[in-house]
Image 1 (cartoon, helix red, strand yellow):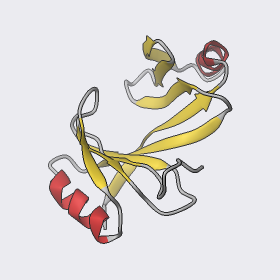
Image 2 (image 1 turned 60 degrees about the vertical axis):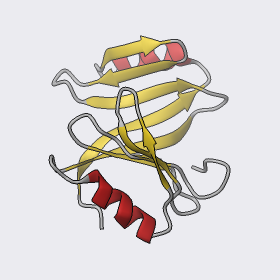
Image 3 (image 1 turned 45 degrees about the vertical axis):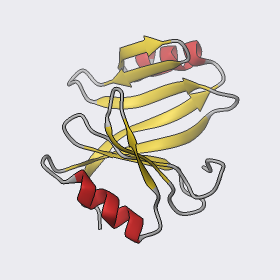
Length: 130
């Protein structure tokens, strides 16, 4: 079993990215960490990511991110996920590490990360489900 320490952030799609950014910054006091194209990353004043917003057709939760203990071997995490039928692949970029994997039907994609690494796990099947 993957030992999760905390929720890292949630990724939401929104049809109006600018409006959503204003809402979370003006109402909840989050700060914009990164904004480029059709994506914005918002976080707390203590430096923790809270919400990743992506341009999309409708408002929906598309991904969750969970932190594991520093030093956790992500190869072990991948093997454990694969034992449960989760397919895993590598990812690089802002959060490199184990990436895309298929989880249970009816679940959202999730990431498992520590010290700059992440595991992305979309729901089972060809389409992402919420």
